[in-house]
Image (tube, rainbow, N blue to C red; front, side, top):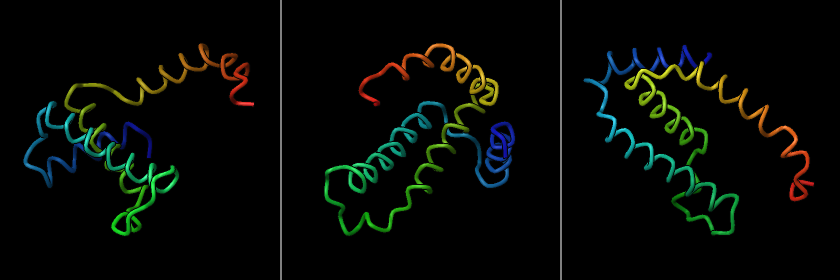
Length: 108
């Protein structure tokens, strides 16, 4: 599935199962909440914090998918074609960062 298809799938899901898109501010708050859940798993599973028993069954993939879902909602409701935007961003990053990362002593 490409990004365009993912945006379309989310739109179809909203129309079939949701009443409507939450407004942009509500979705932004939801995105922040979902990113926080990802951060909690990463901090406890891969970072220095100890993992709580209640967090051990949390699925990182599921939480990342929650983030992606809300990002796709925001893109749809604001008219952003994420496929195009992603390709443009990848091109910018490739041109800007190629030598930058190769010359970063911290990464060696």
